[in-house]
Amino acid sequence: MRAIERLKRDHQILRAKLDVLESALGMGSQTWFVLREMCHTLSRQLEDHIRREEWLLDASRHALGPELQARVALEHHDEPAHLRAVNRLFLDERGQSLEQIRPVLRAMIQGLRRHMEEEERDMFPALEEILGERELPEAEEPPVSPLHENMTVNRVFRDYPETGRVFRQLFVNMPYEGCDCLDEVAWRHGISSDELVARLSEAIHESASSPGHGAPPECACK
Image 1 (cartoon, helix red, strand yellow):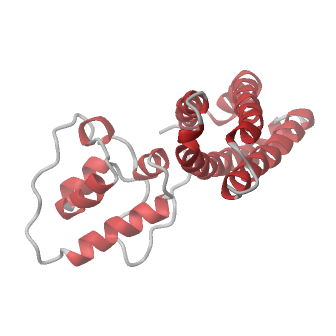
Image 2 (image 1 turned 90 degrees about the vertical axis):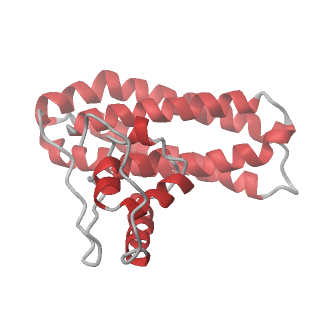
């Protein structure tokens, strides 16, 4: 997948997460623990997205204006800090109520949406022109595992059917997500790609002498 396309898909997923988060905010105090978990997951997803953006910015810094570089760097520092502050508020149940957290969380949601719009307007076109068909770098393959994060779900399941239980535990929709890479699926389900690869590798190791769990669902993408 082209690097810029991955960033665009990141934004789609982040917007969907923010929509759900905003809807939950209007449902009352019973959503406290749901909101807390969603904010924790969002923090991890945002950090992964920023890591990918930083790689592209480093590869393109010579061609981007200093003003744009400075603005993006500031936002990349501020947004995770805001989310960490929200997460700390959720952890302090004795001293905080949802009414106190709601305006802080709404401001964070609005700021993140505004930042994504600015990136798509100002930064993405510049990166697309500079990078062209360039792809994100592959993660180094762990020496004890045959897997890496750029393998698709279908390929892993086809070669190692015993990994099916891990995908089921994570509620991975095989027909829908089978053509996606492991790092994208992990990010969508709120875990790190390293953790997903480790869990899949453990399933392969534990089931090395066991019969497979069947063939993966048919998909045009192998």
